[in-house]
Amino acid sequence: MQARFDFSGASVLVIGASRAGIGAAIARSFQAAGADVTITGVEDQPAEEDRARFRYARLDVTDSEAVRALGQSIDRLDVLVNCAAITARGEEMEPSFFEKVVNVNLHGTFRTAETFHPHLKARGGNIVNIASMYARFGSPRNPAYGASKAAVEQLTKSLAIAWAPDGIRVNAVAPGFIVTEQSARSRTDPVHVANVNARTPLGRWGQPDDIAGVVLFLASQASAFITGACMPVDGGYSVV
Image (cartoon, rainbow, N blue to C red):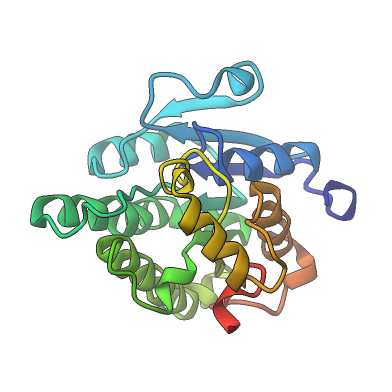
Protein backbone atom coordinates (compact mmCIF):
# COMPACT_ATOMS: atom_id res chain seq x y z
CA MET A 1 0.00 0.00 0.00
CA GLN A 2 2.85 2.39 0.80
CA ALA A 3 4.20 2.27 -2.76
CA ARG A 4 0.90 3.62 -4.10
CA PHE A 5 0.90 6.82 -2.04
CA ASP A 6 3.47 9.54 -1.54
CA PHE A 7 3.14 11.64 1.60
CA SER A 8 6.69 13.00 1.50
CA GLY A 9 6.84 16.23 3.48
CA ALA A 10 3.35 15.81 4.93
CA SER A 11 2.72 16.24 8.64
CA VAL A 12 0.39 13.58 10.03
CA LEU A 13 -1.11 13.25 13.52
CA VAL A 14 -2.67 9.95 14.55
CA ILE A 15 -4.72 10.25 17.74
CA GLY A 16 -4.89 6.97 19.67
CA ALA A 17 -1.97 5.00 18.26
CA SER A 18 -0.05 3.96 21.36
CA ARG A 19 -1.08 0.29 21.39
CA ALA A 20 -0.93 -2.51 18.87
CA GLY A 21 -3.89 -1.96 16.62
CA ILE A 22 -5.44 0.18 13.92
CA GLY A 23 -3.88 3.50 14.97
CA ALA A 24 -0.36 2.10 15.06
CA ALA A 25 -0.79 0.44 11.67
CA ILE A 26 -2.02 3.70 10.18
CA ALA A 27 0.92 5.61 11.65
CA ARG A 28 3.46 3.11 10.31
CA SER A 29 1.89 3.18 6.86
CA PHE A 30 1.99 6.97 6.67
CA GLN A 31 5.60 6.94 7.79
CA ALA A 32 6.50 4.33 5.17
CA ALA A 33 4.88 6.61 2.60
CA GLY A 34 7.20 9.47 3.60
CA ALA A 35 5.16 11.40 6.15
CA ASP A 36 6.39 13.01 9.36
CA VAL A 37 4.17 11.26 11.90
CA THR A 38 3.22 12.14 15.46
CA ILE A 39 1.13 9.73 17.53
CA THR A 40 -0.75 10.07 20.80
CA GLY A 41 -2.11 7.79 23.49
CA VAL A 42 -3.14 7.79 27.14
CA GLU A 43 -0.17 5.64 28.15
CA ASP A 44 3.10 7.17 29.34
CA GLN A 45 4.85 5.57 26.36
CA PRO A 46 3.69 3.91 23.16
CA ALA A 47 4.23 0.24 22.36
CA GLU A 48 7.91 -0.66 22.64
CA GLU A 49 8.39 -1.21 18.91
CA ASP A 50 7.22 2.35 18.21
CA ARG A 51 9.09 4.27 20.94
CA ALA A 52 12.03 5.23 18.72
CA ARG A 53 9.93 5.44 15.60
CA PHE A 54 7.47 8.26 16.18
CA ARG A 55 7.18 11.56 17.97
CA TYR A 56 4.86 10.76 20.88
CA ALA A 57 2.51 12.94 22.93
CA ARG A 58 0.61 11.58 25.90
CA LEU A 59 -2.97 12.76 25.48
CA ASP A 60 -6.31 12.24 27.18
CA VAL A 61 -8.85 13.31 24.54
CA THR A 62 -11.42 14.02 27.28
CA ASP A 63 -9.16 16.81 28.59
CA SER A 64 -9.94 19.91 26.53
CA GLU A 65 -6.99 21.87 27.90
CA ALA A 66 -4.59 19.06 27.03
CA VAL A 67 -5.97 18.87 23.50
CA ARG A 68 -5.57 22.62 23.08
CA ALA A 69 -2.01 22.43 24.43
CA LEU A 70 -1.17 19.78 21.85
CA GLY A 71 -2.60 22.02 19.16
CA GLN A 72 -0.34 24.86 20.29
CA SER A 73 2.72 22.59 20.17
CA ILE A 74 2.23 21.62 16.51
CA ASP A 75 3.05 24.22 13.87
CA ARG A 76 1.47 22.63 10.81
CA LEU A 77 -0.70 19.65 10.01
CA ASP A 78 -1.80 18.02 6.76
CA VAL A 79 -3.67 14.95 8.02
CA LEU A 80 -5.50 14.29 11.27
CA VAL A 81 -6.58 10.71 11.98
CA ASN A 82 -8.91 10.15 14.94
CA CYS A 83 -8.50 6.62 16.30
CA ALA A 84 -8.88 7.12 20.05
CA ALA A 85 -11.70 4.90 21.32
CA ILE A 86 -12.67 2.64 24.18
CA THR A 87 -15.18 -0.17 24.59
CA ALA A 88 -15.89 -2.98 27.02
CA ARG A 89 -18.06 -5.76 25.65
CA GLY A 90 -20.88 -6.56 28.05
CA GLU A 91 -20.22 -3.66 30.45
CA GLU A 92 -21.62 -0.66 28.61
CA MET A 93 -25.10 -0.56 30.15
CA GLU A 94 -23.61 1.01 33.28
CA PRO A 95 -24.50 4.72 32.92
CA SER A 96 -21.20 6.26 34.04
CA PHE A 97 -19.20 3.98 31.75
CA PHE A 98 -21.60 4.66 28.89
CA GLU A 99 -20.92 8.37 29.38
CA LYS A 100 -17.16 7.78 29.43
CA VAL A 101 -17.25 5.82 26.16
CA VAL A 102 -19.19 8.61 24.43
CA ASN A 103 -16.84 11.24 25.87
CA VAL A 104 -13.76 9.49 24.49
CA ASN A 105 -15.11 8.22 21.19
CA LEU A 106 -17.34 11.10 20.11
CA HIS A 107 -16.43 14.20 22.08
CA GLY A 108 -12.74 13.33 21.82
CA THR A 109 -13.02 13.16 18.05
CA PHE A 110 -14.69 16.57 17.93
CA ARG A 111 -12.21 18.12 20.38
CA THR A 112 -9.22 17.22 18.25
CA ALA A 113 -10.94 18.11 14.98
CA GLU A 114 -11.98 21.54 16.29
CA THR A 115 -8.53 22.20 17.77
CA PHE A 116 -6.69 21.39 14.55
CA HIS A 117 -9.18 23.05 12.22
CA PRO A 118 -6.96 26.15 11.78
CA HIS A 119 -3.91 23.98 11.02
CA LEU A 120 -5.80 21.97 8.42
CA LYS A 121 -7.40 25.06 6.89
CA ALA A 122 -3.96 26.56 6.37
CA ARG A 123 -2.79 23.44 4.52
CA GLY A 124 -5.95 22.31 2.73
CA GLY A 125 -5.75 19.20 4.87
CA ASN A 126 -7.74 16.08 5.61
CA ILE A 127 -9.44 14.45 8.57
CA VAL A 128 -10.08 10.71 8.66
CA ASN A 129 -12.19 9.50 11.57
CA ILE A 130 -12.42 5.87 12.61
CA ALA A 131 -16.08 4.92 12.96
CA SER A 132 -17.28 1.30 13.05
CA MET A 133 -19.69 -1.08 11.38
CA TYR A 134 -21.56 -0.79 14.70
CA ALA A 135 -22.58 2.67 13.51
CA ARG A 136 -25.05 0.89 11.20
CA PHE A 137 -26.63 -1.80 13.37
CA GLY A 138 -27.27 -2.58 17.02
CA SER A 139 -25.04 -4.41 19.46
CA PRO A 140 -26.58 -5.56 22.75
CA ARG A 141 -23.14 -5.90 24.36
CA ASN A 142 -21.62 -2.66 23.04
CA PRO A 143 -24.43 -0.05 23.15
CA ALA A 144 -22.19 2.89 24.10
CA TYR A 145 -19.60 2.03 21.48
CA GLY A 146 -22.25 1.66 18.79
CA ALA A 147 -23.98 4.91 19.73
CA SER A 148 -20.73 6.83 19.81
CA LYS A 149 -19.54 5.46 16.47
CA ALA A 150 -22.88 6.23 14.81
CA ALA A 151 -22.42 9.78 16.07
CA VAL A 152 -18.86 9.85 14.70
CA GLU A 153 -20.24 8.99 11.27
CA GLN A 154 -22.81 11.79 11.53
CA LEU A 155 -20.16 14.21 12.82
CA THR A 156 -18.00 13.31 9.82
CA LYS A 157 -20.80 14.29 7.44
CA SER A 158 -21.52 17.55 9.26
CA LEU A 159 -17.88 18.64 9.44
CA ALA A 160 -17.40 17.73 5.78
CA ILE A 161 -20.12 20.21 4.86
CA ALA A 162 -19.07 22.89 7.35
CA TRP A 163 -15.39 22.83 6.46
CA ALA A 164 -15.52 22.24 2.70
CA PRO A 165 -15.23 26.02 2.10
CA ASP A 166 -11.97 25.87 4.08
CA GLY A 167 -10.54 23.28 1.72
CA ILE A 168 -10.72 20.51 4.34
CA ARG A 169 -12.03 17.08 3.42
CA VAL A 170 -13.51 14.97 6.23
CA ASN A 171 -14.12 11.25 5.80
CA ALA A 172 -14.41 8.15 7.94
CA VAL A 173 -13.66 4.45 7.85
CA ALA A 174 -15.98 1.87 9.42
CA PRO A 175 -13.91 -1.19 10.36
CA GLY A 176 -15.45 -4.58 10.93
CA PHE A 177 -13.99 -7.20 13.23
CA ILE A 178 -10.24 -6.53 13.36
CA VAL A 179 -7.49 -8.41 15.19
CA THR A 180 -6.25 -5.80 17.67
CA GLU A 181 -5.39 -5.47 21.34
CA GLN A 182 -8.83 -3.93 21.85
CA SER A 183 -10.59 -6.97 20.39
CA ALA A 184 -8.47 -9.48 22.32
CA ARG A 185 -11.10 -10.00 25.00
CA SER A 186 -13.86 -10.83 22.54
CA ARG A 187 -11.53 -13.17 20.64
CA THR A 188 -11.24 -15.41 23.71
CA ASP A 189 -14.80 -16.56 22.94
CA PRO A 190 -14.43 -19.32 20.31
CA VAL A 191 -18.13 -19.23 19.45
CA HIS A 192 -17.96 -15.50 18.77
CA VAL A 193 -14.86 -15.90 16.60
CA ALA A 194 -16.46 -18.72 14.63
CA ASN A 195 -19.69 -16.77 14.15
CA VAL A 196 -17.79 -13.76 12.80
CA ASN A 197 -15.86 -15.93 10.36
CA ALA A 198 -19.01 -17.67 9.22
CA ARG A 199 -20.92 -14.44 8.52
CA THR A 200 -18.02 -12.57 6.88
CA PRO A 201 -17.99 -13.25 3.10
CA LEU A 202 -14.18 -13.07 3.04
CA GLY A 203 -14.14 -15.67 5.81
CA ARG A 204 -11.75 -14.04 8.25
CA TRP A 205 -11.18 -11.24 10.74
CA GLY A 206 -9.44 -8.18 9.35
CA GLN A 207 -5.93 -7.04 10.17
CA PRO A 208 -4.99 -3.45 11.11
CA ASP A 209 -3.21 -3.00 7.77
CA ASP A 210 -6.53 -3.65 6.03
CA ILE A 211 -7.74 -0.37 7.54
CA ALA A 212 -4.52 1.58 7.05
CA GLY A 213 -4.60 1.33 3.27
CA VAL A 214 -8.07 2.86 3.07
CA VAL A 215 -7.08 5.68 5.42
CA LEU A 216 -4.09 6.55 3.21
CA PHE A 217 -6.38 6.55 0.19
CA LEU A 218 -8.85 8.93 1.85
CA ALA A 219 -6.02 11.27 2.86
CA SER A 220 -4.49 11.28 -0.63
CA GLN A 221 -5.25 13.15 -3.84
CA ALA A 222 -6.60 9.88 -5.23
CA SER A 223 -9.76 10.69 -3.27
CA ALA A 224 -9.80 14.43 -3.98
CA PHE A 225 -13.55 14.41 -4.80
CA ILE A 226 -14.58 12.40 -1.73
CA THR A 227 -15.77 14.09 1.44
CA GLY A 228 -18.39 13.18 4.04
CA ALA A 229 -18.04 9.47 3.20
CA CYS A 230 -17.87 6.58 5.64
CA MET A 231 -16.25 3.61 3.96
CA PRO A 232 -16.97 0.11 5.36
CA VAL A 233 -13.90 -2.10 5.63
CA ASP A 234 -15.34 -5.28 7.11
CA GLY A 235 -14.83 -8.12 4.67
CA GLY A 236 -18.46 -7.84 3.66
CA TYR A 237 -19.86 -8.49 7.14
CA SER A 238 -22.28 -5.56 7.00
CA VAL A 239 -23.83 -6.53 3.66
CA VAL A 240 -24.96 -10.01 4.72
